[in-house]
Image (cartoon, rainbow, N blue to C red; front, side, top):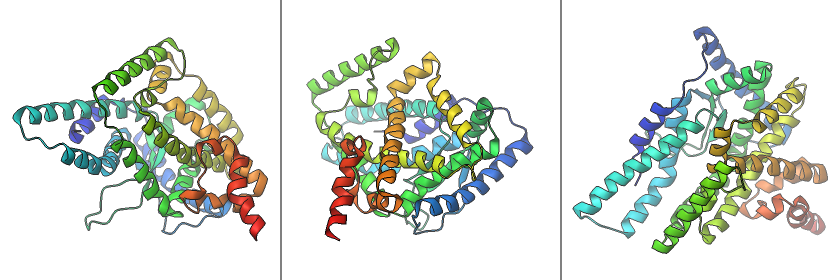
Amino acid sequence: MIDWDVAVNTGVRLVRPGPQVDLSDARQAVVQLRELSTVAAGHVREFTGMNPLEPAGPAVVVDRPGWIRANVDGFRVVIEPVLEQMGADRPSNSPSANLTSAVGSRITGMQLGAVLSYLAGKVLGQYELFLPPDPDGSLPTGRMTLVAPNIVSTEREMDVDSRDFRLWVCLHEETHRMQFTATPWLRGYVQELMQELLLSSEMDAADLVSRLRSAGEAVADAVRGNGEGNLITAIQSPEQREIMDRVTAVMSLAEGHGDFVMDAVGPEVVPTVATIRARFQKRRASVNPVDRIMRQLLGMDMKMRQYEEGAAFVRAVVADVGMAEFNRVWTSSETLPTLAEIRNPTAWVDRVVRPAAITE
């Protein structure tokens, strides 16, 4: 259903080149980013009180095409088992069905590659949660990746101290690595949610027409600058929206926790953190009309709200009960906040922390 090679080739062909950097400066940036990712690991561990169950190691530093290839690999790990299951439920070996499948998979691959080519110029780093199996067949737990051209471009645009900014980015991504390496069950939980979301995508012709109409309205609203509709929510069924609420809750927690830690570690670690945060927020808010439309359609504005709401949740809980009690959130899927609790931190504290305190 998806031609992964077409996705990679399309993305790599369409992606814009990174900033012009002297070879010596580029090498220095790569070396420093790897070093700072290791430095960040110590700060995150000390600040959060979380303990990874495996050694961290330095981050992998990539360019934009490398980021595209890595994300296609990640999509394959999550999506291919679901596609195989869906295909087994609808077997067809007729020539027309095979031709339709081949053409459709190339079109889908091109669409995925085009989206990734756009995103590849925006992402500073990420924790790659889903990786292809090692040669021995074992599944890696994850990998911290930094996109060097985007980091260099952003620090230049904001005119901030490069070392401070690079460490600041590393603190955020290292927090994600800590979340998943200190909480082994979380990776499987997220993968189950993603696969459940995909498997709930069956629709009849009437549903398809209705969702295509919603998608068209979302595009029109984005172009006009009206509303907050995006293609992700426009094509979802009620069942998918319920699953998506759970996905949004866990991602808001993860992203908000990363934002909280990267700022709260303190100016003794990142001396210009206040300046960096202020200029970063200003940069997020000031986008050109084309970027504004793309951000809304691809759900990037929704992701920005995840950062904001998640960070507000973490700040409120830590201020109320402290970091050690906040860390109860990582105990199991039952202690994760719901989307309603993300927006009402006291409700999570009353459900998870205070009942436990009463019985002790």
